[in-house]
Picture 1 (cartoon, rainbow, N blue to C red):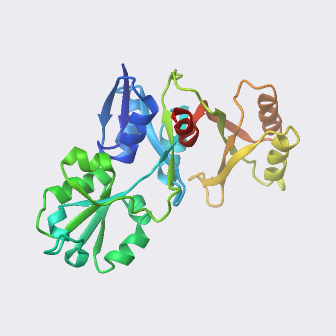
Picture 2: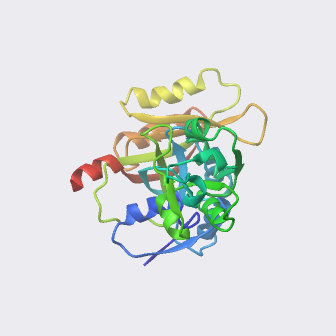
Length: 295
């Protein structure tokens, strides 16, 4: 049975983990902080960690990427996309009038993780613009706080699994601002992962550091991929944290490291004087495609 570290029970990370492994039994160790999720695997307490690194609405989760780059040496072993469906959760009787209709006039505070909160701001502005917004460590923690404070007019933004976990009800379903709200997760750990489900492709993530005082270096790096017709799905700069104005370039290549052309491209980039670090070469799993297969 695989041991896996993840954010608290009832979060989107927890839902995504259950989806990836399907019927396969896993041992899950939940942590309140993402740093503890990383360290659980880095210290050998678990085999893998579930890390959200990108969202349709909010973009990159910079803190988590920086941890992968600067704090731990844990290769990416799988990537999958999972819908982030947020709901308004609380004690329903607090938000209904005498006829049983929804009435948010008594809503005082809304709690959630800041990323989840940002995904639902249109709903908040429309239904309770006066409510205080409080950020907490996870959506599951927000639900737990609301559960323990009945009668105060508090509500949480969180998952259906989070509501079920803490015994609260969903007051309003699917309150995210956009229907296509997906989160990209990676599973990191020291060993390759074997899954029974079919992947939708392969990807290799690399980190490139350009040499200083080399005009046009980034252009030449990209040319090494372009003339070989290697498709890049992402390129992002991150500060090296060593010197002001110096950056890493995080690049996703839609090829496995075992392919014929990718190793040659990396050697060409190194010949330019660039430093290249492979963050992982792994299968990818796409939620929409697999959902269609089930139907």
